[in-house]
Image 1: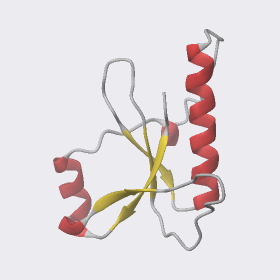
Image 2: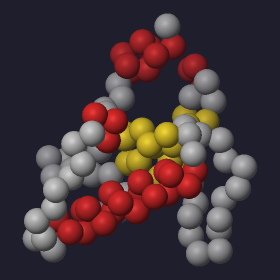
Image 3: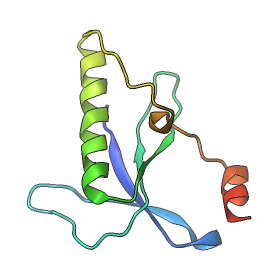
Image 4: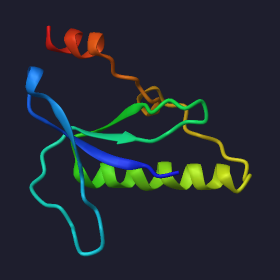
Length: 101
């Protein structure tokens, strides 16, 4: 299962999410956050997980989440961090409206 890193571009109704290209030899620079992770869960949902405004910490969070899912696929017992900020959040239109108000 792939964990993809996105960044938020624009404000208000013009807000959209753009994939951050992290391929070999493609170190992005001067990309402003906030950054989000997107992945598929077993129940079919695809949450948006906010990982902050720093590119390096967002890349680290992506690698940790990818390693977590690979360990689950290999049936390795894993204890996930239960920190409140690490929980995925599903953004709906209502949530986005509340954030703008």
